[in-house]
Image (cartoon, rainbow, N blue to C red):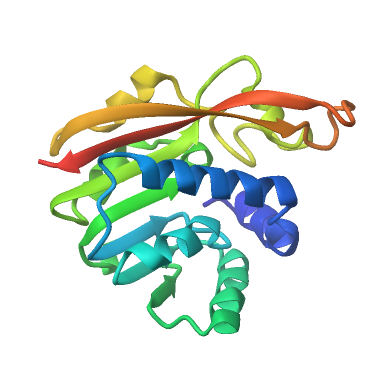
Length: 215
């Protein structure tokens, strides 16, 4: 994470969970749980967990969950929720990744567009999958509307790095060591982010769920 990104997430942590952000996480979690390849049980990691919106939905389905994120302020919001609910089976950590063990399930949601080069990350995550374990990458599909998902003041290359990924790019992430690649889409709409001067209007997007198992 760059210094600019770190400062941005620290600033946004307390207000990150806007109503539309919470609703999107709920829809994405429900969509994830409906997939025939989703197998509960064992251990899970939420990579780029942020404030834990996805983490909280994974909790009922796994024996142990690790929430990994480089932003301490974002994780602080998650820790407060876990303390409030008396949850003890979540390990909240800033990492680094190479200090963690193996998991039966690794999922990441809306984190990859903040990473300059995602392919090496997918390769590294493969080393943290148990035999037959599954990685699921959830992020935006590249398209003409995707820029509107971010605040107008956010700059690509400063606050984030990708206006989504194409289907080909998602498939290309899963290289050697992965098998049974699958991709599904979940259409959704959200209000325009502030700065676009489109009050009350919504934009259409597509959330991609790209997944494969450890070969």
